[in-house]
Image: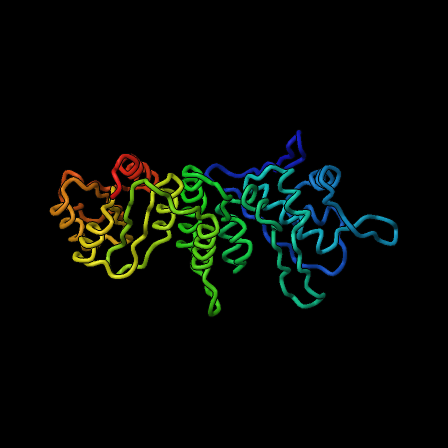
Length: 335
């Protein structure tokens, strides 16, 4: 590792092709530690710790009999938060502000229990600074629902672009990473479910009044599948653009789908499936009964082709699907 000359932060060194190593949690100790000992445990240079102390106030809080300053358990935990955030790409000044207000639960000496650290206190700071997929995954794996809610929170008035980035740069990467992890949980703990619940709560808190006078878009999920979080994110991004998007739940047979089209007269119908082996007969029947109605189908790679029709298109990404629907829905009559 090398010391950055401008702010004292550490630039990790690694072999070609090797990822930056994760920061290991420090072994908890009863006696206060010296600068050199803490630097070794965090994997940084002693000069970096002195810089963080001088610039940001993240220094040792105890003194030994000889008046030498020493780092307590809580001091080391705050520095661990600082270190993790800087590795995630957060600016040192921002990381220090978060670390300085981190809630540190220090275990009693000899218990062997890991101290619990909540790296943020405050919804706005979390959303603006710590909103990274890595931070969200870490919080979810620790079953820290409060931090997950803080990280995924949306500012009131957030528009379509903010919703798009919220999904493509935060939620989707975090859920993808969690799907690759093998974890052993106690009953009631589910990292992916914790993230989904936090995201749905964030959308509910953000939701503006229902748009008036714009187009309607129906977002369907084929029968036998749970509604994925992507459906909520897509509908929210459309609502942010002034479109009355509705996520359809429950059984959606061909008959139901045709009835919904007649009742709502939508500007577009979107079908989202997480499974490749999906029955798309409702798409074919809607295309036959309403040939001018735009339909978009999002399927995983390897799925069969969508039913033929001049107004039926397949989308492969969230961003592509969103902008294709927007292009049609904003000019579609409602009613």
